Image 1 (cartoon, one colour):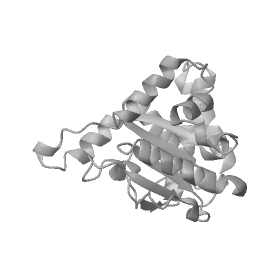
Image 2: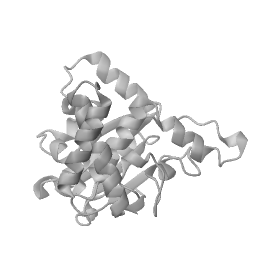
Image 3: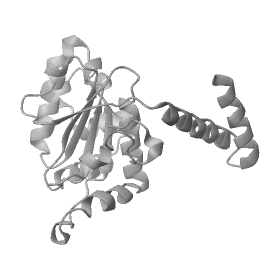
Length: 231
């Protein structure tokens, strides 16, 4: 899987995460495990998926991959409500058995608790319209590893029609609940040209945000100078 979100799913020597999310038999929920060393871009991929669902750009990918299906099987319910969570933060919860997925999400977003928010999230989960993004299985404290494994399995059983994507380094994979049959994906390293492209867009975006998206030509020049400095 490519870890370059700027490419917007265009694979260069690997597959896009969206190809696996919208692959054949989409009506069946996805169970994906993304494996890679520290700093390889696992969290970046989950952030990309979450943001892309939020801003609606997922439609570009759903059209690209779902149109490969026969026309009578293209009408599917997209699971476009992303629920991103850090598993190491979830593991700090003392009463993990009574922690619902909706409560965990609201707490992680630091959203003031309101019953309406919890009910809305739970309704989307029951309808099978969510993609649950669980980051850092390997970062869980060993003393809570089995509790987290049980918690993930409970989520799967309570909301079986939603997608679940989990990231981990190549160890502690035994913590993955036995009940989750999954597709295991490995992160591809960025090529040199991709690193340059990513860096160019990164510096430019930072400069644009610093200046409230004014003076784009000046921002481009400063971004190019910063990139040259790091080369």
